[in-house]
Length: 156
Image (cartoon, rainbow, N blue to C red; front, side, top):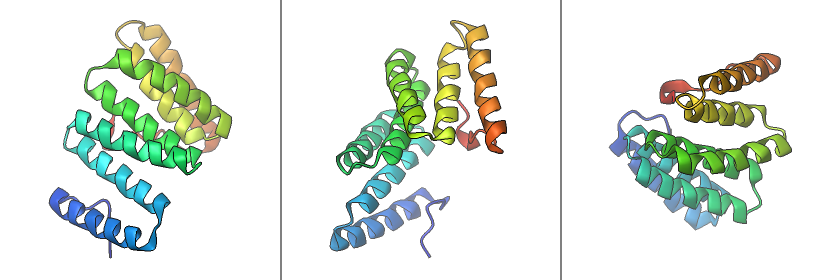
């Protein structure tokens, strides 16, 4: 059984390599996009935001080419996360704003929440009141949806 929550990162890479091989044989580009995305998330777990950004950009580009907006937005939000963790908020801010608009356009509350949380993280030092309002909105949306913001172990 393949698991992408495999705690052993070397084993996770091996599993992703195996998936990539099978997906290439099947010519499944959407699946390859997800494998690429999961590789990027592995770099985030390793605290390698530059490599994560590079790989997540490849995933987002592939998803965009395939017309898979939800998946592209998902990858782009994690690019924003990588930029925030790399202490590059000025570069993250315009990306996250654009992606937030698209998340609203496609009607994806989890992605809207994620974008608001990232924007709040960027605003915390410059304008703590604005950051608080962004977090409050994220929590309101989560409550309305009957969920909680998915911050997991990657809390910003």
